[in-house]
Image (cartoon, rainbow, N blue to C red; front, side, top):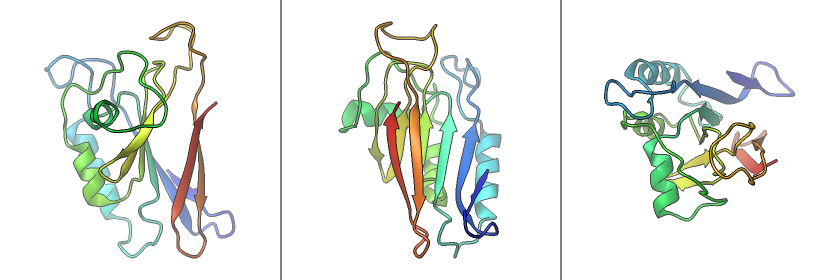
Amino acid sequence: MPIENYISSNVVDARLWFFGTGRADCMGAGGINCIRRDQIEWFKDTSDKLPADDIRRGNGVAFMHHGMQEHMHLVNHYPVHGQKRDLSRCQAINTGLFTEIKQKGTIQWVSAGGDHSSDFWGTYAGVNLGYGRKTGFASFGPKFVQRGARIFDLSVDQDTGAMTVDTWIR
């Protein structure tokens, strides 16, 4: 989904990408559902249609329900902002989406979260990975944790096309 420039509507400043991870059973392996190959092919095809010389080509933010295995690797092995407070699970099988994100260079941020009390973000292999916070009443994790949502404030430099993102829990 393109986000048009506020001055010139024929310029796309950034793109939002949405991936459905479903609820359960990753390709017969059980566990948490995962991004499927047809979704990855759609992402690759759509990314390939973006002009290689577009200075805003890499200004993408992706959203999905269940985090990729890279989300859990990040929070378990690297410094992050925020906290991992409860058992936040990831997709049962690594189907290669993160590798394609790296190769295509069209996504700068990937945000996930399944209504847990975890609210971390950090950078893994040059891609920012975030995990949102619980938003509902019948959610996972400790009941004393305040509900909230991860907010993204995107800014794009009009000369360089570079996108900066500020994020916080509200």
